[in-house]
Image 1 (cartoon, rainbow, N blue to C red):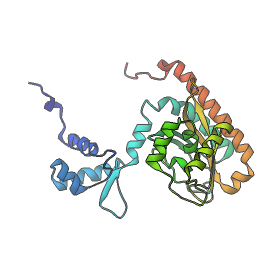
Image 2 (cartoon, rainbow, N blue to C red; image 1 turned 30 degrees about the vertical axis):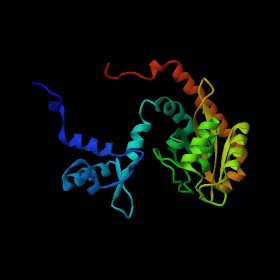
Image 3 (spheres, rainbow, N blue to C red; image 1 turned 135 degrees about the vertical axis):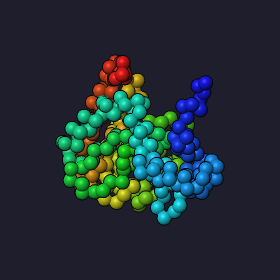
Image 4 (tube, rainbow, N blue to C red; image 1 turned 120 degrees about the vertical axis):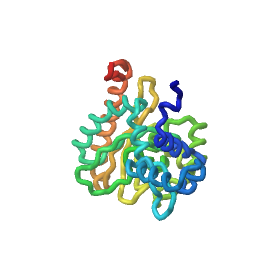
Length: 269
């Protein structure tokens, strides 16, 4: 007789249950806590965790015994069909942007009130080590793509984001006042681009612009990140490049979504 247990692979079942422990209320566990919660042997739990760590599905928090979800899971998520069309539309244009300016290009979407980086093309010069990575998030209030994405939220949603994430200070340029931040977002909407003026890291500046869908909704933001010296000397050129790039990404995305069957194909059919 075939039952559900017939197809259950015990070790995979354990893996899924371990990953399933993580939620918005608890984002870190020790090996002991995981084994206690699930009633697993501690040594076998540790072996599973070490294997999950190797593929970056779990990540040990430095100088602690705690493990958190790793960027490998974010990477899988960013390559799911929900982001597939925007990634397909953006990648060639981000590559071209990187070739033109020689600086780091980013693509981000808003996820739970913060910018989630879904693509990144490194600067050919690599003067700065930028902390962003695909699948990671940075604070929305002090990053170019974050401010760009937040600028188009309605008042209620923006208030919820501010309530949840606040205004952590990273540099003397970080905006930490709600009224000032709202004025900044109003300015961004009017001018059509956002600037990170060394607000998250000294020496780093960036310019970001929005990507619109056919209904005029902002679905993503792209940016150029570079040193403050290069940014200041090449600002007008960078502004022109990022605005053209995001406009073309939007057009490409809209084209894909007009004919989704050409994108969502089943290779096994």
